[in-house]
Each structure stands twice: as structure tokens, then as C-alpha cells.
Amino acid sequence: MSGSNGTGPVATLAGVTDVVIAGLEGVDRRTDGQATVFERSGRPFAATHGEALEVRLDPAVAAAALRTPDTDESSRGPAWIRFSPPELDRIAIDRATAWLEYAWRHALD
Image (cartoon, rainbow, N blue to C red):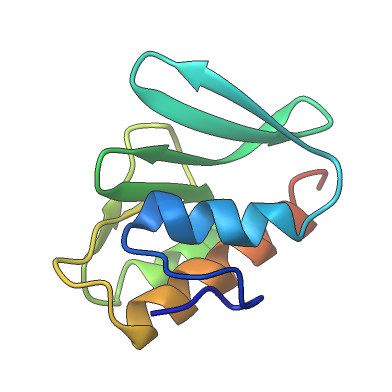
């Protein structure tokens, strides 16, 4: 499966995240233990850890996201969700991409 910008195969959520993040401006990356945390102007909005992606969303959007498959509350705090699909199909990639872009756009809210 190829990345949305044609950069080649993405076999993991970390790979999907890297492809999406490459297209966003002003993102800093740091390591926090075994997680990679993505920040905009010093505010974390996403993290990858193993086979999971965590994103900070508006509380109403997070509540809706929690009703979708393979999504749970994150230990990172309120409005953070944890997405860990057993299969990285097109639908899972689309959801991860949409949530990452949303979280980036609203990181400064």
C-alpha cells in the first residue's frame, strides 16, 4: 500500500504517520521513552508507540472516534484517543490520516 503522497509503501501506523507528518508544516518530533511524540509550537498532538497511534482531538470528535473500531481512550489524557487496528487496510489508513491532520490543525486551539 502506498502513502497518500506517493512516497512508497507504508506497512505500519508509524509509516503512515511519517508520510502524513512530512506534508505538514511546523511539526517537531521528540522521543518520550519508546514513543515518538509530534508537536506543533510545543503542543503535543500525536504520538506513535509500537503498533498504536495516539492523537489529541476536540472532545466531541474524540467521543465520536471512540465509537469506531480499534479505537480506545488513551492514557495521555482527555480527548486523546488510541488507534491500533489489527490490519492496516485502506480504511485504517484513511482514519489515521484524517485524525492526524485534524489534530495538527487544532493543535494550537
